[in-house]
Length: 567
Image 1 (spheres, rainbow, N blue to C red):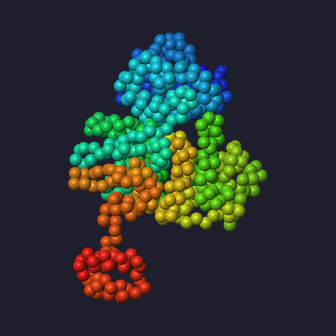
Image 2 (tube, helix red, strand yellow; image 1 turned 120 degrees about the horizontal axis):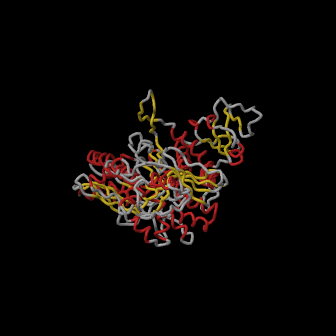
């Protein structure tokens, strides 16, 4: 496969395919400025004439800090635009790690290596070829500040080369987050994701209200994305080092259904090229009205998000199923949720504008209780390929689960955790990090454990990990102790520790006492008991007065209290 640069001067012009080439990686002009370095090229991968992937290729030249302009000049001086670039030392990093799998899936490993050598992929040259010229360029400040500025490129550089090392798979590595404390010092939180035996796929932040769990998650998001307090400008000003090693995750998905959270909503206004590295699911949204933007809250967002995410899962499966390591998203959704709620079909509610009697429409629709539904499966999705039905869906109604042709009745908690599974599966890619803030806000204790079980299945399928902030003891006992981070406030500020005992399958009272201290015991009950014991004069009198409205625990507590007080 050839690599070709198209001259131009318009940054928003996507690369097109030369008529003479069916299979080609095409690059075009971009003048994006990374702190003084303009290394970005627009990129598109074509196979059999169809565009498979669109991304950015950061290319650092040894003799220029404006790559596209330099390539334009070379073409003006007689270069035909086909890589390798003549007369220049250079290295490149793609913004999307999927490029490697896409190439191998279509042209094989040997031809993919030739492409890597043409673009001089930095990760490949350093780790597989030990190329000295490439390593010299990697050591330049421009490489870190420009080529590795954004999350997708960092993932490509750190892990993309592994596929050329006997097909090794990437995995999220352990990392430590350095939280800034009020006194100016840092508190380290070490996230553990790898164990040969115990399930380290989920880490938990637990502790009383107001100690900084949500602040920790918000900091992690901003530091990893490089926005707000994690921007280069802010970090240069404070001198703060947010990580021991930058997390090698491919995408960050955040779920928070609290009306009070203040997480980053999207990257639309961020000074970043890649707007897809982060996805937020919650109740908040940006609202445009009369030319002004504001943040509003909508309780229908989880439902509408689920409808969009389900369609995205089908679209991704159709587009990327050729990749050698692709996991079918729709299959994962069905395998996880069918066992949990027992449905046999997925459906989306249609608007009133759809004419079900249109003879040109495929037979994909069904009327149930006076409502029209699109039955969503692979056969129907393929049948609708040439119909634009996106505006015919009532997204606010969310995904409907059908059993024997009838909607399955779900509690609000069941419905929300089903939506979360679909939303996460729709957006997830291999090596994603899923962050969920206080899942107990929308789940009762029984559903908390079921939700953790479902989440683990989704994470496992995509080699991904999760971090949860919670008060739930039921969740904490499902997590090994090295993955449980107890947040507590000391006189000199925040302290974060792992429990000194094994929490996995442990005693919830012991976990509660360690995490929350004596405050976790029911104070109103203790106070009531003390008042009544004084009022009745003795434990035996109070026990007699309570009659049948007493249990063994109260009897033991009363007798112990009497012995302890010398009564």
